[in-house]
Length: 214
Image 1: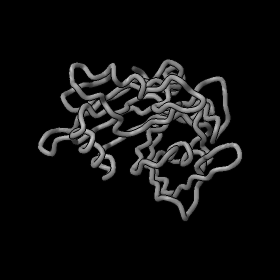
Image 2: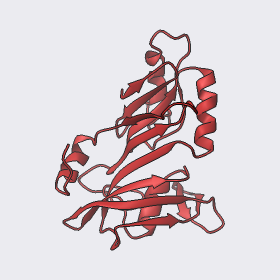
Image 3: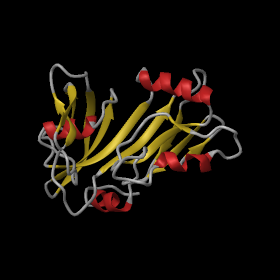
Image 4: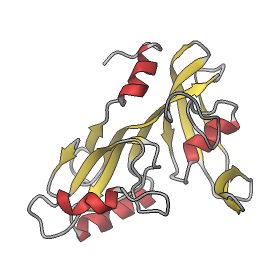
């Protein structure tokens, strides 16, 4: 747990743990939420989502009023989300914007997200934090919250995230994508509620070789 107050909890979700139950996974975060009530009569609820293979900051609402408020903030794009990713190759520039609409398609083997001008608007800001050995360490700030947005946006530029089996290629390390920091402007007259998640050990080892120091 990264933070807890009267209204919300921010967890450091481990990679590999799905937030919902599914046909291929019995363990999931929702099944664990009753243990995070901490004396309140309400079970915390998910205020947003993270992919199963993404680690880092995840916000829970501690009561229905908080869930409603957080839902409005996320829908309006007022929650500031910062991700770190290690990508194969990487951009020639040091920063930029990806403005690429996305659409969900379903086929015989399941669903995936694809770029499509007729899809939902999706926009991601990025900058390079480090480079080395054919990889780049990027900071990404998504301005929209589409499913798999960062993964598809980076892969579409030719920079798939290291360890991404769906939009890149599987490798010896897990998906190198971290929800690094989140800032929630819960109260209009107070500073945002913020939390920052450390890179998990497999990602930390890769980042250290690109200049990161804890």
